[in-house]
Image (cartoon, rainbow, N blue to C red):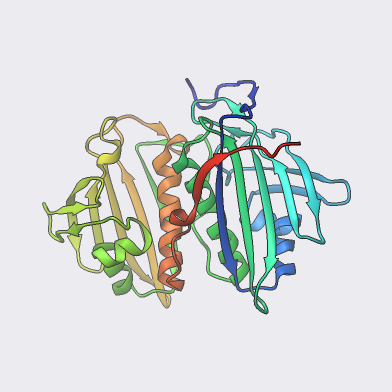
Length: 315
């Protein structure tokens, strides 16, 4: 089924829902973070390209090319379920389009709470049907969005914000700039300790030579290219059923007082709609966690997102 086929709305039943939960700390006062999740201009910076919020009228709409699981040109109806500026809570419906094409209703809860002086926490719960989005889809979605939230709040340089459009191709390219030096980035990408820090905590070993093995713990990948502090690539067998020759390539270049980090995945046998592939938003999420790790040494958001069954409270 086409991921862009027009379908009706489907609601998950009360007995087959799950909840993605995550909390991120930011070094700003709670009122600043609240404005970031309830103000039109602030939300346009980190959440969605097109946002309109009216707290008094309890109206919310969002869309655009930076949101996965929606066509960039469609405007499904969102609804504020609850908003409380005093308690700094916001709940809303979020219709999402599954990779198979159907639009399903989901619900998001935001809550900001103050911690120490000029530090606060954003808690996020996203409730979906068991089969509406995969666990990895949910983790990729919130890794992308919440890294953007943290980077925006704390004044970091631009992050990876991929475009979810109809663009077709045989490969895709994503990049970001980091304050980390090229040698530090390369070491993070090519050592067991580095890979554990931002990507795969179960990684077992890496043989840093062409023809060597990168053992991630769930798959053994062939090392394809090695050029110290410049380039590192490996075969990507996770999608081998479709394209057994896919290669993921990291390239590093000095830029200003930091490093330009570029990731390319390709080449697909036939042109594909890039934004419909899980590896497209997946690698974008990985890259944002890499930037987060390089610049803050914080735990990756992807690995912090808890997925568990959800039951609606009794009336």
